[in-house]
Amino acid sequence: MRFPLYIAKRYLFSKSSTSAVNIITAISVFLIVIVTAVLVVVVSGFAGIKEFNLSITSVIDPDLKVVPAQGKTFTITSDDEKDLSNTEGVAQFSKVIEERAYLEFRGKRHLAIMKGVDEHYLDVNPIDTTIAYGLWPEVGEPEFAIGAGVARNLSIGIGDYRNLMSIMVPKPGAGQITDPTQAFKKSSAVASGIIDAGEISTDHIFGNIDFVGQLLGYDVDTVTSIDLKLAPDADENEVRDKIGKLLGTDKVIIKNRIELNDALHKMLNTENLMLYFVSTLILIIALFSFVGSMIMIIIDKKRNIKTLSDLGASLKEIRKTFFLQGALIIILGGFIGIILGLLVAFLQEQFALKMITPTLPWPMIVEPLNILIVYVLILVLGIIAARLAASKINKRMIENIE
Image (cartoon, rainbow, N blue to C red; front, side, top):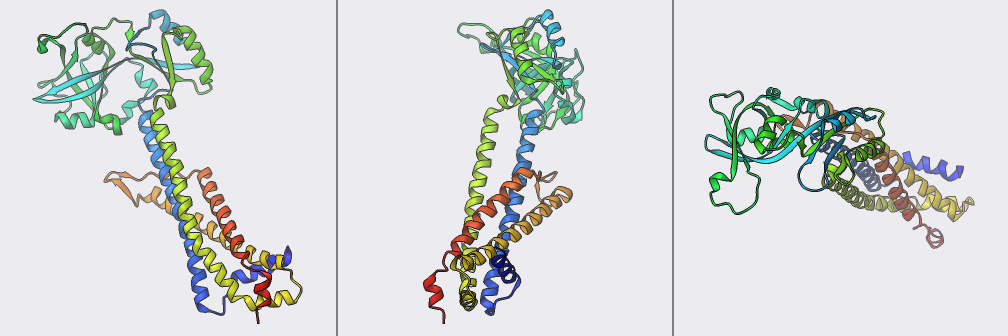
């Protein structure tokens, strides 16, 4: 093993007698470095986008969410609230009423998701951190914090008490509607703040649960969901079991943040899988040139191969020599490529070289697991390519060398 490795290291840093071979070898090594660097940048960029998307949903998605097993609402009594407060592992909870509503302001209309929340909501979901202008609605006031997209579509400003926003919701009941004007309940409110939190900004508005409950005609104990924040050391499964027994497993369903965004997680995982698949294809294409350069090196070193054979080196040792040379090129090129990719990711994170929007730089997150996968992928495919190139050396080739 020492003899082939010694010769391989000598060949690795020595120039060929043919300038064309030197150029081809340099190009193949350059491709390995660049492809590796690109893969590191791509996986780090995708990890950043993935984390950015999940961070947007986490603004309004609690650790656990209790929703009705059937229908749109369920009842939570004052005794249930006390039991929830005393449940081990529950740091805080908030009652929520959610319904679609038509908004109207100076002739412009917009269909929005209206959320009525209690005074504990910000302790569970810190959405007030995304308020770009204005304030979070005060308890007991007919005020709403509206998404930036909603404000843009309605051309509404904040704190305009002279021109109130109209909110219309369908009246509950059954039977045929004969007068469309009587099919909705209507109320007025003011926009107290504007939320800028990605996708939810396009259709969400947040107000007081009492105001929304009265508008919808709900009883005081009626809610559409309960948002819960878990204690740092809480066991999620144990808390779910306790809440299920408390509220009734036949009446409610308890979902965590991943289950609330099941479609998003599946999409991101599928995109991640496709990313590695495409990256593998790109790497395989780059390694074709590497195999070609290795074969050119073997042809260029044929006299050395004959000399090694005459000195007693076996065919296996000669093949191992060129295999180790190729493996060393892959190891060194992959390592340099990873360093270069990490440098690009660091520069993007520090200096925002690439912008998604004029105010939002492309997020980069370097995950050690992703870097390890890229390097292992480079090594595995590169070593296979090196072995394939070294296998071209055979007895007939050595015997025909003059």
